[in-house]
Length: 398
Image 1 (cartoon, one colour):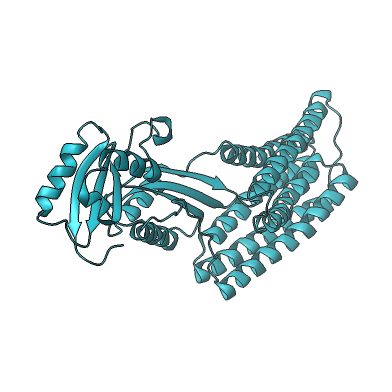
Image 2 (cartoon, rainbow, N blue to C red):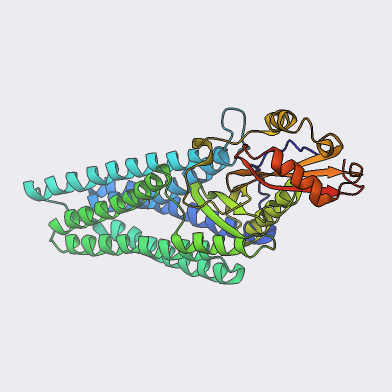
């Protein structure tokens, strides 16, 4: 009868395979990265040669993108490694740490660019005309960015990827910095050299913004911020719709890299068996996984009655466990015949009491079920922890 069975369960997700689409998305990202790289190098080299701070800054801006991509790829590779004995929750935080680091580097670089240009502005150094080369590079860069944008958008629409679409708009917003630089270069070409430094400051601030965003997102995750309220409510609703679930409370989430962890308490009817309650929990886990692929880990805890908002059970005085219960009852009922005739004993721990069910194959001579139950009740008056007391007759238990 007695089952020793834990109530906390973990299930590990198998990421869905969308092979061809993913490959196409990767291809686009790769092409974008290569073009960014080539253009970035060209801008930095030309900028150094003609002495245009703005062009160098824009080159660094293009680079910051690639750096981010490479970083994310690397971090996801390490972050996606299976959990091991030292990191039982997986390595998802590696991504977070990498993002934090990258954001800091970008802010540092941005500050450097802006500071250097401000000093040039204040000192009023004559800034040489950048020449047609520099302007040509900026125009080509702008054209390349626009082409990447259109191409990425086309693929995003075809594979229906929100992420790719976001990336496309991101590359278009990067083109903004190149427009700023182009304006600065043309102005400098016509003798307004200070415009180049102004452009460099503006682009420096843009790079800083990218870094700031990375820092903000990753620090939110390091302090275990929950998923957005709407998503949590949807999760709760999905769990509550599973047959056999009477309520869901203490639903907690946190993010881990690109994945999320969830734990929750599921209230089930009080007298179901352990294995049925466990299966209800498994059903909840399955539904949640189907609805929210982002979940890497779901841990559920089964409650026989709704204890939301009450003190944590383990902090309250406990009830006697089976061994102690049998010992005390043996003492109390040593003269009661039906107790010695039992083939099984069921205990239900509800409402801070223990409900006792005694199963017998045959009742003692001349006793009805009611009489047997009354005799037991009369004998155990002083045991305050006993709740409902029942005697059951019939084969099948034991």
